Amino acid sequence: MTVFFITRFSIPDLLKKHFQISKQLDIEDYKEFLFSKERLEKKMIYFEYLCFSSITSQTNKNWKWFIFVSYELPEEYLIFLEKLIKPYQDKIFIHFVSDMIDFRKTLSNILNNEKKPYISSRIDDDDGISDSFVEKILHYLPMDKHIINFVHGRVSFYNEFTKDIDFGNLITYFNNSVGLSIVNHNIFDLGNHVKIHEKNNIIYNNEKNMFFLTHDEKCCDRKRSLRKN
Image (tube, rainbow, N blue to C red; front, side, top):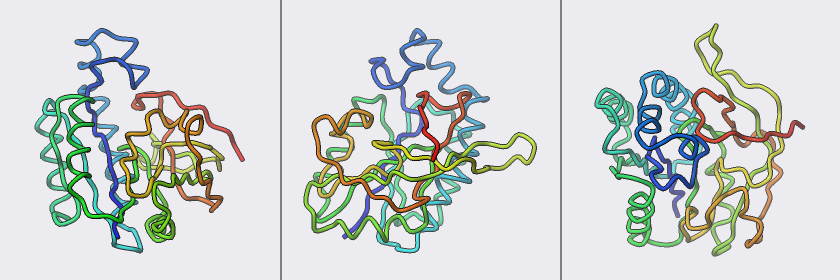
């Protein structure tokens, strides 16, 4: 019984389908932005101090984490990632992919070889979850193919003055992507998380402060609509 966290770390969207920024720019300009030092420096801050720390501090240790990285990621950031995860080599695994199509294929192959029961959960590289996430999501393990969405969280953002992650308003966000999960199935097979409810029944969990959603137009690839509590 394991929770598999799945994170896409700056993978090119060459088909221009997944992110707003990839639709606005031509391929070369888009890649230049995606792998720019300014963007990746900020991404690394969110990843290390929000995403990474929130997963590695889980109270329940029944989790593994698959991080999918572009072959084109600049070497200095790959070295940083590998150094960061070194103490967790039995739990965190880096997989290299060329684009979103390759990501989906590789992820499917990985999950097809995993033993059930399990829960697959998506988390972006700049978002975070409550340290009790695994403990609470595992309660749904007997519910095969059910989708679970925690809807109450907080906004997170980088504070330029303190050089740290701050937390802002409480938000209620149905069908958000942070920790969106499904039992015994690949969460990324369900498509766009914003439209997931149109073809699926969702279990909406009302626990408070279960996710931290980064709202930073300078590094987020998709603009987000947030509703305050």
